[in-house]
Length: 443
Image (cartoon, rainbow, N blue to C red):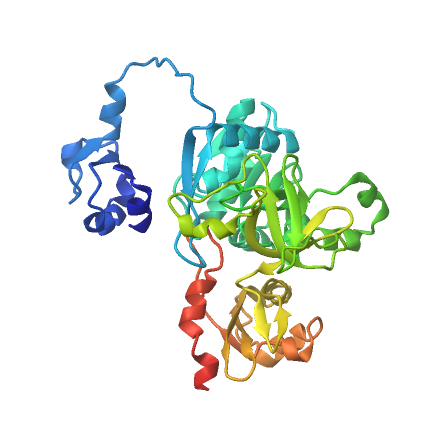
């Protein structure tokens, strides 16, 4: 309801399956003029409290088959997306036609899209316009397959579609590929994804996921970094030829942990708390700033967010990271997710990746919550794999102790059935922090 009211929209198109969702927010949205229902039924057969309603199919059938396309201003708005609001209220980002066209050409060029490609659109279209994949596919005339409505219980069927259609490119968040990998491990005949490029973003994919896909299917998961403000893809992790030649196999896998190289057309710099640019030494960590033709320059109707941008046009990403001498970006954490314990910083991302590298751990999340002595201390939430329910907290601590100092280890490890996620599959740490905020202070 907040997004509907803040954006000022007056017409809402509703799929019949989502009528109940629309009904739940309708009383809070008094500026809506009508609801347009997508259904194959006659409108009289649709049961809903929404009003007034119109049929999407009827509207289409009553217009001319041909349309004279106007000469649009390239800087006029093409679409809008709102951030997921994991650290506050969702913020509106508007994309111009120019933004989209340039980002589409970049995406198609980087992946050498051709008319012979088969693109499987797993990323929801509401998640940063589907990460530009449908636009790039249309741009080159490639085959584009839409999955339809699905959830993580459908990954076996989605895997079969990828095999049957000989998919050459798809994308998704780590949660989707992790669920798919679990299904693939149980299959007698493993699928061959050796010709597929699988883009993984939204959050950092664990190395166990990338290696697992490679070992089981031959498919390469390509690490990417982006945001709503940056139209999804700001980096792509591909190997420079000389690195592929000179580095060992293990060193290349280590390199794949990084988010990758900044794509053509964008400027990036890492700055400290005073705004001073940091060296590209792979160690100096600060806030990531981005600037470029499709990077947003402002949030819609949110003047209080002007501090998110610099005077020279950079977006303050809210992510902490570092750049190495080859230009590979490594995210160390969301600035608001970094755990500040006793004056020292602990990376929640690094600890999460260490946790899921344990063969008995399926999912993990690490958050910082208030502590009476140390300001914040880590709390780990762990989902165990089937058959590993007897695993102890001591075993998890021992695994983490291989890569973390004793003072960095989580004060508490909780075994849970599931971990809260946002609508696009990201870890919802805002919800977790609220739920467990008193755990250490009460004890």
